[in-house]
Image (cartoon, rainbow, N blue to C red; front, side):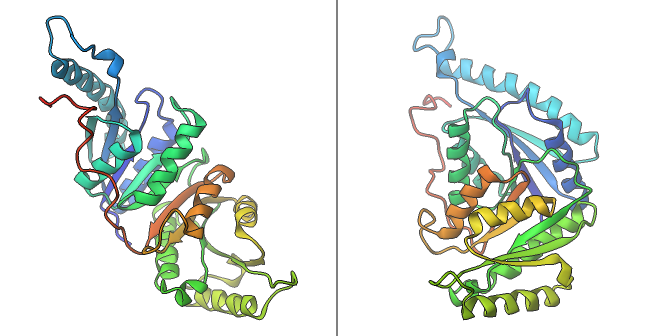
Length: 307
């Protein structure tokens, strides 16, 4: 896993938590990555239909420039850490589409999004995160924890059944990503977690026993000690969040197989549920990133023709 281009999407330029910038700076320095600091705004109330003495395009350009100046202050915090930074501000709407459009322009290896409601309602934040899980054209890291990246572990959620579903490389991708992140951020340990299915009688099935054997073999292959492997039986929605708290995970890495409808994919639904339940960061990786269902240009109603 190689990350050379990181993109941090911020919604409120005056209220970005310092721990988010610290995390991005640590990661960028560790992998020698360039960071694009992105912010979008859309304030139609600031652009009246007939702006006296000034065209709407000029009003919008002035608002964008004002946000660029404020965003430069955040960029300077990263530059003081020795990180190469560019800034991008766009007049665009809705936010998740604006983020995806910028990702298509900048082509980051990793998109970083603060998973904290600032100027948005929890419902708006949840909708944006769901759309990014489904359509982001790269890996996505949702930053939730305020803890410093020097303790705890990076937790990789694996499932040997992926091989039977045609996604045989997914566990390898998930573990590889977890190890890259752990190495970049203070060499914390990597742990594996698998929730094996129960039989119809509520007992562990033979298939679950096979899965446990495969998970432990996977751990050996990646030189992960047996003490850092947990296999539990049951539905992963609650047990995974509970174990992440028990293990003091700083980041949970989940892999999603592509090719199926993300709206119906169980792993995508699980990732969305975990965003609410987790107290740690969540990193989503995919076997393949398909072209998102988002246009390259904002809707005509968002931008005047002269922009």
